[in-house]
Image 1 (tube, helix red, strand yellow):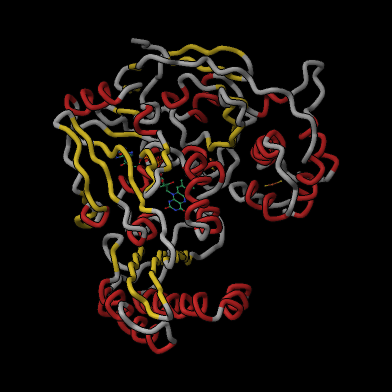
Image 2 (tube, rainbow, N blue to C red):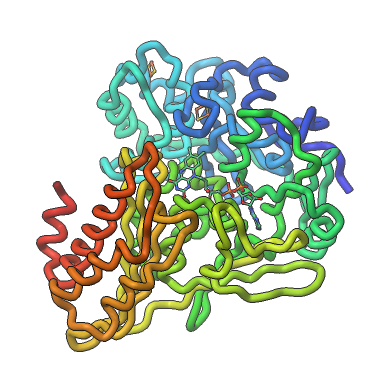
Length: 464
Ligand SMILES: Cc1cc2nc3c(=O)[nH]c(=O)nc-3n(C[C@H](O)[C@H](O)[C@H](O)COP(=O)(O)OP(=O)(O)OC[C@H]3O[C@@H](n4cnc5c(N)ncnc54)[C@H](O)[C@@H]3O)c2cc1C
Ligand code: FES
Ligand code: FES
């Protein structure tokens, strides 16, 4: 079993002992390699100053936040930092030249992060329409230049010929770096989990990485689940789709959006590209936050989880997983293997909403998913999930009852809106007061009615 972390950094192989299982890539780059081009702004995945690019074996290049990526996660990967963009003759990379020529930099602190996001964007061959450019830059903040010249640079960058990606040192066997375990099969993962129930399960580290960057206190052991093929598989069946718990958002989004198109704008607001490169749906469920974005929509879609241990597998409806504030039904020896979602059938519709203080890169104040079956103007069935309204993500059972069997009418949705207060007694916090949350949730149901019955009105309201 391998016991040293190996990856490719700026085209050169690196082999090292992890100083601690919670050492972040950013700290290692700056403190151990002297690569200071990658900056630390927030150390929480928010500002993008620490952005570097993963160069995948299949040629994909994806931006990540090095401040919350743990060194052990990089085993077998190829990483490029801003220092690795320089041409062999010492001249800047065309992406850097485009940024300079568009006057897209002022104090320069944020610039390496923007350059790396722009490099991933250019390598992806994407079109420079405003929506795509904003999406590519949503994870990078600039405090002085203003975004107009940066957006201008992105339009110059699109279509630039970009060199082939570096070849990663592909790891096939399991690895163990001190207390950081990186199994490559389900059998090994479950055996480790049974032996170390106290260990921290780690997927993309977009939640756990914050612990690393804040406290730096190492847990007793870490088990990294992201390289276990059974946990990363994505399958499309005739009646349902199955998403491995450790599949990243970036990997799962195409299939999810193909089946539930309303998820496209919703998922584009889940973190940033950097977060979606690493973050997983299994991690969003495992962290059991009452304001995670996936649980409300997954509750509406009737998701079921497959939980596995050396004792076997069990199937659990997602709504039975959340027991209380950050308390779940996961046994100490279990891991989430996958989730399954039934496909939508004729007559079924799905919508979702996220309210947050800012459009991008913000956790929701209230999030909701709705699946309804409507036939001949009558609501035959309704499943509604809300986040931010209780100690756990939760179905709105009184709202559902107010809708079921009723005509698709404004009056029906008024009754549903009135039922929100029966389902939820939310708390006040800095994201929103209890009364704001109840009012907002009721208004989301009114907007749902417009989407179903008066789509033009819904579009007009959404454009406000
Ligand atoms: C800047 C920033 C923006 C963010 N924006 C959003 C947002 O808009 N919406 C949102 O919902 N979240 C957001 N998040 C939170 C985070 O990105 C998500 O919760 C993400 O889905 C976590 O996935 P992960 O793979 O990174 O989990 P990790 O950090 O690796 O793990 C999270 C938890 O899940 C557990 N876990 C992971 N995999 C498994 C498994 N297979 N079985 C059992 N337990 C498991 C871990 O033990 C841990 O407790 C944001 C985070 C950051 C840093
Ligand atoms: S330092 Fe701000 S995102 Fe990493
Ligand atoms: S140029 Fe100063 S923060 Fe962006």
